[in-house]
Image (cartoon, rainbow, N blue to C red; front, side, top):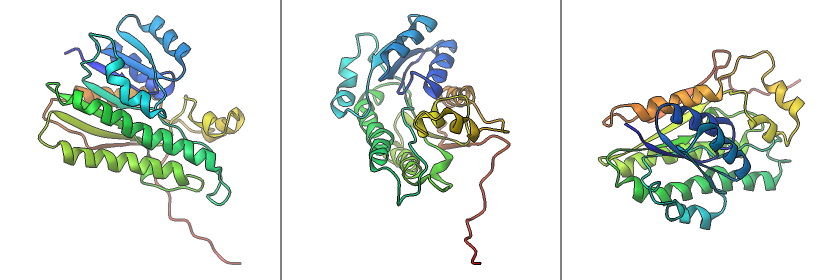
Length: 251
């Protein structure tokens, strides 16, 4: 069955991989992001089944107006993938940038809330609909410098579970996908404000999971029978595991 899938943050990384996989599976994709030129390049690559739409999820007016701004024939959204998000900085809380904190909350929390609320009435009209929220293992496992990023992803995971309680018995399913170490995207470069050497060091000597692995997981969730809801998917590469509790020893 062909679906219409709306993906936020589709200009790169997970979002672009999810768009490519969805088109390959015979679906149509509404690809949203701020970087319109990248979306247009993606449309050139993937053809007429991808609709590029400029959207900054931190703009509440734009997100609230999104459903009405879609062209005729594209408004019947079956799947919402809340992928837009970012991490900024790894400084300890006492010296972290408040601007970075505010940007993470505006994107990862407020933006996701507004997009979800805007699309929910439309999703409820579909025979079966799915919301996939991109969270992180940082939602469950703290690490030094993760502070607000981890907190925003904990919101995403808990919001997903609470959405399910509101939507139980409806046609709308909700899944939180929670990746661990994932390479091959802009994530760490953005986190370190363009310091590519430092970003590369995060993945040195590892085989991380990839954006294509995330796209595979989203495709699996979306393609399950309509009576099946996957609450959470926690993913890590085999080179990663949850660490021990931190202990500060004297002397």
